[in-house]
Amino acid sequence: MLPLAKARTIGRACLLAAFVVGLTAWTPIAPAPADPGASPSDRATSPAPTPTPKYAENGMVVAAKKRASAAGVAMLKKGGNAVDAAVATGFALAVVHPWAGNIGGGGFMVIRRPDGSVTTIDHREDAPSGATQERFLDEDGNAVRARSRRGYLASGVPGTVAGLLKALDKYGTLDRATVMAPAIRLARDGFSLPYALATDLNEAYQDFAAFPSAKKYFTKGDSTKPYRAGERFVQEDLAETLVRIREQGTAGFYEGKTAELIAEQFAENGGLIDKQDLAEYEAVEREPVSTTYRGYEVHSMGPPSSGGVAIAQLLNAAERKPIGKMGFNSSRTVHYIGEAMRRTFADRAKWLGDPDHVEVPTQGLIQKDYMRQRMASYDSLRITPSDSVKAGRPMLASESMETSHYSVADSSGMAVSVTTTLNSGYGSKVVIDGAGFFMNNEMNDFVLKPGVPNQFGLSGTERNLVAPDRRMVSSMSPTVVEDPQDRLFLVIGAPGGSTIITTTFQVIMNVIDHDMDIEQAVAAGRIHHQWKPRVLSYEKNTLPQDVVWNLRARGWPVTMGVFGGIPQWGRAQGLRVKHPERPDQSRVFFGGSDPRGTGAAVGF
Ligand code: DON
Image (cartoon, rainbow, N blue to C red; front, side, top):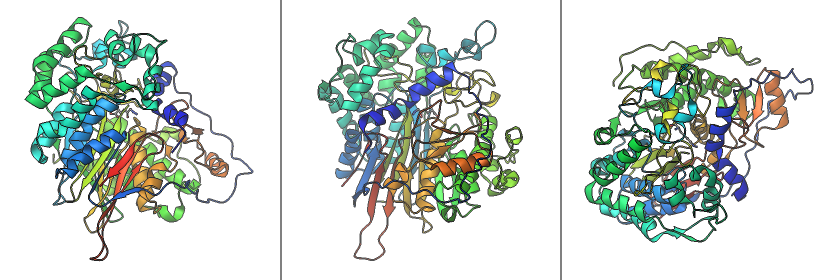
């Protein structure tokens, strides 16, 4: 476990990202001259030792907070399935993890059924019907990025409640009252404030003070009265909001009192979400994006998330090289996957959008041959010049069609992978008065104006331009992997804006190519490149100096940290299944909760 201070630094990543990218343009770092002292070796790095992963035989939940994992496991113990457990975990996160757990945000869920079929539930926020580009431009046509990041204009129509309840209705077995009971109890009776949450809330005091309702619910009204670890944190209005959902289902959120409170407060404060936007919101069931990787089958989230497409592209590129032999975080490996990341994120910027509004060439992008062509310009000794790394031209085949991740599996072979978010930590910082929950600031994931990057430095085209009723492109990448015998193998995902994609990809490689257990795989140091800015980032203490020199010698601008200096990123939550090799053995679930955070794998 990392020291708390360090873990909290990472926890603030999303906020910091918003701040840093918002205030400063990315400064391209000039490539360092080839270092004559660079080691000629391409030796692999050894990941740091980690504790043995948690294990269990009947089922497991790995989430960003132990109480939320426990809420899910309580459903498995009652005989519920992985979806029941995921829904209980999701609602519990909305109570114990206000930073990112939510009912005022949205997310994506990938469900593997016991028969091996896979489906997904897109519960991404959509833009209110009044959300036009002009709302986010000043009179000179410049993007006013602050409007998409903070306050009432920043929110999309929340999708979490619709998504969780759709999953429960269609694929769960327990009733709403049962799966929502832990969340309601935690809100109504309160829970003992963990040190990390108390400190986070105290540090956000100034942010909350700008919004009376945030100040009312998430401060003690005065900066000289901080929260203390161990004190009871009760959220009565949130409990009542959850009770309305328990009693009336989606109508208990998208209609009636909660909807009225949202619509009234948004109208009074220049926001756009109205009663009709709420009443019309629907979670959408979609096909997963699937690919194979060295005989394993990988299923992830399709558009409007870019995650599944990008992970498929990265795996298709990685599969072309013996990554295991090349070594974990060796300069050869980092050089190769860094090049794959640049090309993949160039495609993301150009091609991704809401598939219900624009044509996304998903099948063309995930073809293995497409990535072969994209990597044809790869040179093992030199980076490809930046100006020549641009989006590719996938076949336009007709289509068949602060964030938190939790991974769940049950004894039937069912698995659920969910990534959920308010976007920045505590979203727009707006709390619905009388209902007690934070609203998202997901409008920042739209392109406000082509060429203007969002808080994660991601840019895009007209395909992701803010427009009424559209869903903004996401990087969330909940993923399920099956082994070559078609059995459940891995359930994985992570928070971290654009780093979600590269984190999830590297965890999969760590397990399959570098033979790491799930705890090592989520803990291991990571690298990141997102095409723009033109810099290869690595986590603190991840790359030995000779690897850094070797990369610089190949022409890479290399820097420690992402988004202007955040040293570590992506609190991945994953589980891996070990199947019996002999009849006297049983299946075992191994859980790995990223030591960068304060989550937990709980099983039974
Ligand atoms: O959907 C996305 O890609 C972003 N809204 C995710 C934000 C995020 O991961 C923030 N957390 N660390």
